[in-house]
Image (cartoon, rainbow, N blue to C red):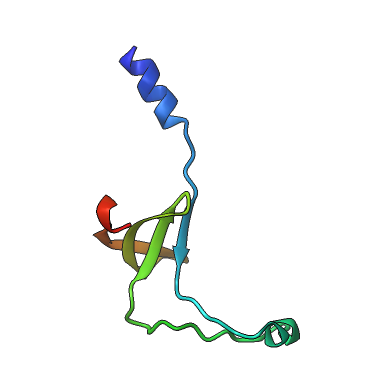
Length: 83
């Protein structure tokens, strides 16, 4: 029974999202944006990114480069009480 339960859990997919920062702007400015436009975020280079699992904050981390890929190194887990 435990093996079946473990297999069922292992087959569940979780969507992971990483938020670098946020920005707020008027809709008319957003509508004018085209290719090459830059959106400045309210975050600094050294700020942690926010890591979400199925839209729930689970951790904070920092952006790292692994070979040719961008990755996130977890620096802090978020407790259930502070989510």
